[in-house]
Length: 568
Image (tube, rainbow, N blue to C red; front, side):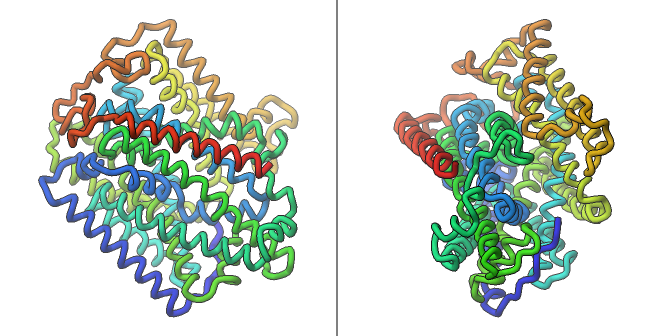
């Protein structure tokens, strides 16, 4: 990741940044007091007492997803190729609806704390161990380290040394995550959403105004920058990959990744969880306009000679430095800090939940509630240290190799998406089929990564035109789709030639058995989510809520269609 260009900040800017930190500290302190107000237990620490409303859930889903490197990257890609990168944001709106309407009822009903735990309920302990291991390793090597690194870069941009900035980010974010658990993460996310959106809107409005309006922006950038639908041969965003491959990656990220789904598990009931995902779906329409468009604005201004843009990745900081007055720059920097801190706190909390619930608790089933909470806190401390320790290696290895390390998640996600999707839609698929799909997909994904590395950036390691070169270089979105099909065939084929799952493995966890009660051996659960009522006594589903949610869902789909038509 390249360093952000130095931003000159005035006294008012620093005042805004200090105020931001004070507000975050205040909210985190309040959430920590709330978390510790009663007897400390794992449900309170890891799932905020399972009593969170839809607005907070939706805001946290959005904030957790948008990291500062994400924000800067969207603007950079917008400056280099236009709105096509926004396809992933628009698709996320639809996939979030899938999370809320299709997956959430089974997740909430099963009463699980983690996604690996759900796989054990539906399949086997082996499936649980696989997903827990893959997730924890991926979080440490990519999400935690890259977010800490991004924090150091943001502080470098305002004149603070890199390692000082990285330590500030880790100390502040780690402190409130360790002490307050998921509740502190959720409510600080709620504040950070407003800061993040406010800063981005300021950049967008002032930038478009500087150009003279929307029509002038389109004229200066060219029509090609406003076309989301690229030809099948496009190296980055082929329409076939967007339609068939991107949804597979979306299902894995938005519907099965602990980092995201943990927010819905904290909901008061199914209705609040579902409405939170719908709200997040509406929020995910914003990045195209407030993150990608500023990049196009920077490109258009550079074409007019109004600013110098040597590198597209510098689009956002260059735009902020050139257009925003003192005071507003501080809001944008606070927005960048909000983006990275919300992502970092979320991954800290989610990863510590996996370590505690899927590793420690499995090895120590008789652990007390207090022990579980303290293991969660200690694991967060260890994760922060590991993340910091990995940063020097990120500097020493090539940027290309680190890109490949991140892309491996895209190669292992299709089998995970397959076992979750088919697991709730079919009661015939079994544990043997799931492991065959997970391990088979993993092997194919690692082979793809290996051949891609061997072929190298110059693409001259493998014989031109050979099957191996095609395998290594096919667009990753196309690859994701084909790998998903292979994993589906493995899952179905192996399941059909092996034993039918025991009734306990499908009861209440598939659409065919949705009316049955989930079978669980977790006698220590604070309350049974398999019951038709939520913890606070409210009905698990309310017909009036469902009707309103359906209206918001249809409205969101209609807006997505309008955006697709407009940017085509």
